[in-house]
Amino acid sequence: MHNHSTVTKADFAQVKVMKRVRDIREQLLGLMDRTEIELTSNLGDHDSIKKAIAAGFFYNTARLRKDGSYRTVKNPQTIHLHPSSGLTKMEVLSLLLYA
Image (cartoon, rainbow, N blue to C red):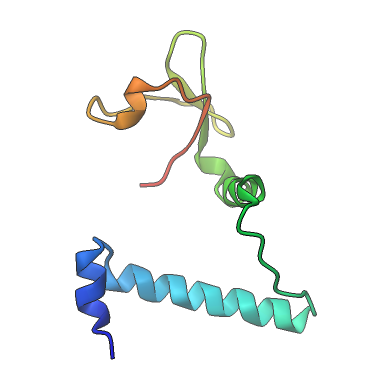
C-alpha cells in the first residue's frame, strides 16, 4: 500500500490539492455517465487537451504584445513575468495564468 502523503511530498504535490483533483475527476466521471458520454483517451492529442484547459481558464489567459509585455484577454490588464521565470527566455505567444 502506498503512503500518499509520502508520494506527494516526493513529487512536490500537496495532499489537499491531489484530493481535490480526485474529487473533480469523480464528478466529471459521474456527469459523463449520466449524460451517456463515452470515456475515451487519445494520449497523442495534446492540442485538444490544451484547448480544453484554456477554455476552462479563459479569464486567466494573456497574449504577447508587440512591446514584449502580456495583456490578459478578457479583462485587459498588463501583466509581467517574474524575472526568474523560464518563460522570460522564450517568446511565448499566449499564457495560461494560475496563481
